[in-house]
Image (cartoon, rainbow, N blue to C red; front, side):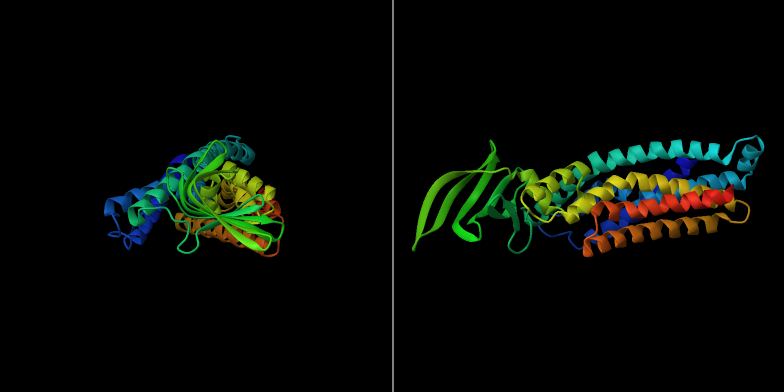
Amino acid sequence: VILLHTLITLLVLLGIYFFTTLVGEMGSVGRGSYTLLDAMVYSAMLIPKQIYELFPMVALLGTMLGLGSLANSSELTVMRAAGVSIRGIALVVGKVGLLMVIVVALLSEFVAPALEKVAHFQRMQAIERSISFSTGSGLWVRDGDSFLTMSNLMPDGEAQGITRYQMDGQRLIAIATARSGRYEQDSWLVERVTITRFEAGQVVVEKLKEQRWHSTLTPEVIGTAALPAENLSVLELADFVAYLRENGLASQRYEMAMWMRTFAPLATGGMILLALPFVFGSNRNVGMDRRILLGVLLGIGFYLFNGVFSRVGLIYNLSPFVSAATPTLLVYTLWFVLMRRLH
């Protein structure tokens, strides 16, 4: 029953979000080779991401509706009269919730990020014919004592408009520009290179047909940096955080995203359990309409608090782990207090 109501709730909300995304894409239809079919495919490929984002609210609503339907038909009363305790019912609900959490966690970690990357690349290719990191100066990344900027990174890994600034402490010692390049064998093989070196009292300019730059900065790392932190998997975030720390760069935003994605399954489990005290504490007095309203308000409240608290943590330089864990901890605390009242 819980699975059925959760699936129905998920389909309804996904339908709303799909058409909302599609309507938002209508303004891009006609640009380049971007068609209505492309917009529909793009919107459909974002569905796994939307499942992950909506699931805490969906799980709460589905559980409340499922248990509420059993309460309204007096099946919960019969179960209690037969000697099944609230703890026993909670255990069954927890097992069902665990199954849903595992499925959604796997979906959000291995399916949603990959599909979303493909969706964005295809969309940008159709609209602009190339993948640009920004409309201005491109993406800036640090690689040891050097800084690189690239204007475009194609889906096949080829980079265009590459500039490398080599530093010696605080002093700029050389600027190298390349028309294009490709990463292979732990280095960038760049073509049509112009190197400007700043030596003692003079500037030396050298032009090469090609040159190899040894670097650990792979296209995958660059693509990770070009995407919003929320669009990455936990493994990608962990690798990128390690890269940022290794190069002495600020990593708090990506650490926050990593811990929020890590705690998301626990938060979903807490939302499922949170439905229990509301159903058992008011199964005779609360109708289905009020139960839906209560579930929506709780789900939206958690979503807003989770987002606001994470940003407050970044502003005040709080530990990303603490900022990500606090909303989930509050959900379980509220569940524990309400369950104690039932007993």
